Amino acid sequence: MQTIIAPSVLAADFANLQRDIEMINQSEADWFHIDIMDGVFVPNISFGMPVLEAITRHAKKTIDVHLMIVFPDRYISTFKKLGADILTVHYEACTHLHRTLQAIKAEGMKAGVALNPHTNVQLLEDVIQDIDLVCLMSVNPGFGGQSFIENTYDKVAKLKALIQQKNASTIIEIDGGVTTKNAKQLLEAGADVLVAGSFVFNSTDPINTIHQLKTI
Image (tube, rainbow, N blue to C red; front, side):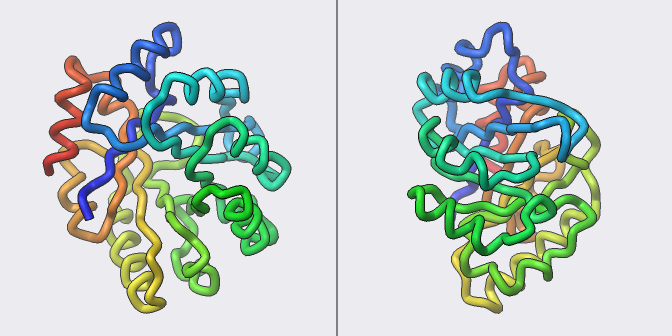
């Protein structure tokens, strides 16, 4: 499959949010990646529901929502109403992961599971066939602009092997520190979706930066 590029809106200019959303609409990006943080699961707070609603009103591409929150089950139907197409929960935040995945799918969304850098991909072995997307955190979750964790390449390869072994259709997303310097190696290891925040929005020409990622 062709590489999916998902700019992370967390790195956008919040004072010019509509401008940055329109830029993504006009670019070769495929998805909007939107991080929701609660200040509990991660030591930061990001968008609330009204901001997400404003984003989805203008966005013309797939809405990929990444929940970095405790007790995500409480809000599954809310995020569907707000326009999420893909809803990703953290493995570390879900006591009953299978039930959470079923609840996401029952709302008509694709179900994703995110893994923190220290979490072993083998822990997904029993549910991988129920997961549409696995988001591997290649930085510690909570803040943008961090350095890429080099162990991620091995982790992608192990996850890809698990997916193939179980004959699952799960795709692999990489979130954190993605640039044109590591994108090729990530794709060769088995990644399908590249989330890029600071690398896109801090560049002098974000549309061209997205093009460069898209054509690696």
